[in-house]
Amino acid sequence: MPRIAARQGKRAVPDAAFDLWLRRGLHAMYDDVAREPVPEELLKLIEQDRQK
Image (cartoon, rainbow, N blue to C red; front, side, top):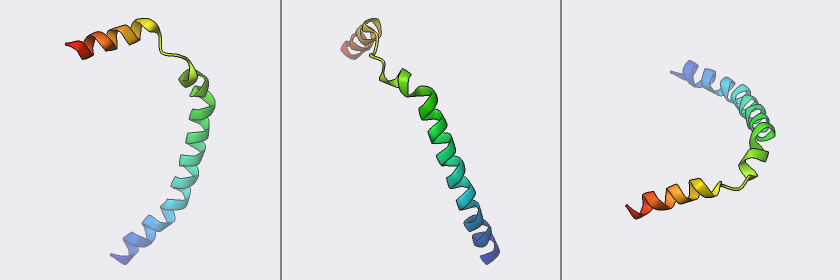
């Protein structure tokens, strides 16, 4: 069992580096889109669904 734990510990650093790279890449690609206002038509559809 200790060998498994040791392997998992070694994976944590590359996984963290990948997670950081992925997070930065996703932010670079999608932050502008996420800041856009929600279209009025979509807000109306959401509100209609809530009332049902």
